[in-house]
Image 1 (cartoon, rainbow, N blue to C red):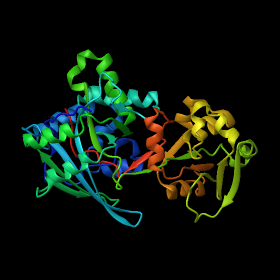
Image 2: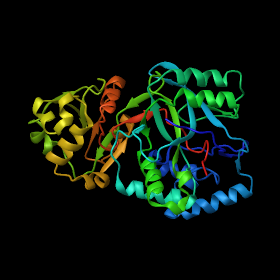
Image 3: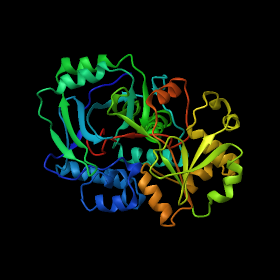
Image 4: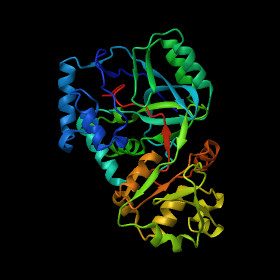
Length: 391
């Protein structure tokens, strides 16, 4: 994997509340709150009135006013994240830098399919803003990279520290020392990376490189990325839950489901170890052997919580929902309480709850070249948008 130092565009140090979650997990209510700050990054990533050209106007204005400042030295950005999860304290470390992603060379490995409309939307924002506004999220398998990053920031004072509403404390450091930068570059040059988050942004960047030579191809040869080690205990992977509209009913599809799954009503206090449907009660789905036959070659591994059991078997074969309708008729959330609450309020007919991923299973699947349905994984903690822009 090839990375390079760059001159990031950063928000002025005295500004508060300029960051946000990645654009694709920001709800409408969150967006409204975030945009009360005139300089929040969502004004760029989620431009008002859907006018992507407005993002570039704001960037130019903010740079003139000193709201955004371009660093004058080539640097790498190292980030530490302190948080509590599953009853333990963690500190994850990672790097933000441009990564060479075009032409594709099998070094950067997507693991999810994409929605065409979402790629098109991100391309428009990128082309009109002439910036990469938030990093994609890459995970590598090695551990030496992590040790080098921790050593690089030992004794350094972070250029900014901020706490997210979720309690994650982010500290980031600019590293420009030539020896340190070269050491970091060498530490991952033989690694491949799995795309943890940002599939649509990655594909948009690659399509711009291929199809828009007038956009400045050398810039789009690289994708701004956050890179961390998959082996860190502090990198967690949950499933993403599906929310089915009010026109859908679990009771109506239950007879068809029973042909492929053993269905059991369980207590809400039980941890999720199987795909589970919530419609006011919790119903676990244990796949039978014939369920795996329905998802083609992917069924050979017989992974009992395989997302293709949902998208290919339940959505397409049982519910008769074409893939293009999945994009418009299915809602998504990484929060079980939110999914349950939405069903209880009557906003949705039922929810399909996906268990936490076993990391070794995920790694095995991706190393075999498996590309899963859209919204199969939720890597966390996320990297906030607004830490750095690549323009």
